[in-house]
Length: 310
Ligand SMILES: NC(=O)C1=CN([C@@H]2O[C@H](COP(=O)(O)OP(=O)(O)OC[C@H]3O[C@@H](n4cnc5c(N)ncnc54)[C@H](OP(=O)(O)O)[C@@H]3O)[C@@H](O)[C@H]2O)C=CC1
Ligand SMILES: CC(=O)N[C@@H](CCC(=O)OP(=O)(O)O)C(=O)O
Image (cartoon, rainbow, N blue to C red; front, side, top):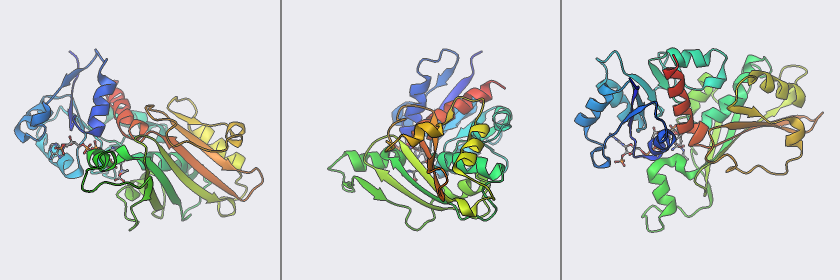
């Protein structure tokens, strides 16, 4: 029998992209709710309890409600794309490349929390350096980022694309999260293995999909002997043997004059760069991804496939 998959929130931004990625899959049975019934709690409860894997593409509160709806069900497994369970100890964090044992943890899990888009980039560059002993305890990490506007879901898409929207945003690029209490900070800290919460400054650009996440570092504050080359080598070693996260060779990144935030739009991969000058005093770690690809829907499908391969 084919595994039954239900995407709760299938008509939203993340849900639609997951559906699109499953359009040609003949190995799955997709359970679907009509768009007009998307908030029909009884129908959702029924579908959630009929699924082998439920993928939640809902706001945090609705995700918690959905999890409660399957509380008595020992069969259904859950992938939650919201922020609700990303630092919960009994949920597996769905970033398969962050650790050698993570794919197995995801395969075995009943509950998988899909990472946030910005944390995928930030954890992607920071965690390998913590594990290699290059980034010391207590280092004050900063994370600066720009996202495509689909990261804000249906509401932000309407605010940016519809000039008649009462809350129309005309700025080509804006900063937000100005209180420095963005909901992604706890997962960056926990899964980035950081002692101190990073200063996180996100922004949005007037393009639908794509993302740049930057973590600049002072070499003199890192473990003795840390260089542009040793940091790059640590990332290369960490990501060896998988095909989703590419560590761009130093010779290649040295030739670049600019990075286009939309380069990976529509793709489910992530590129990591180490910028700086050999023998210099600073490096800038940069992650490039699609907020809806490896940052959301692509990762959700990757996690689903891992769970189905258990
Ligand atoms: N967009 C992105 O880049 C990313 C998003 N995420 C996360 O994915 C989740 C979904 O986000 P996104 O797709 O962007 O959001 P959208 O607003 O685009 O879609 C959310 C969907 O959920 C529906 N919904 C809202 N409340 C309920 C409810 N109580 N019961 C049933 N359905 C409900 C909405 O219906 P309605 O139209 O009626 O509001 C809509 O169809 C969020 O938790 C978000 O944080 C994660 C990573 C990246
Ligand atoms: C541009 C924009 O608004 N982005 C979203 C994050 C998108 C994402 O990763 O979603 P989660 O809500 O699942 O964490 C934000 O900052 O809230």
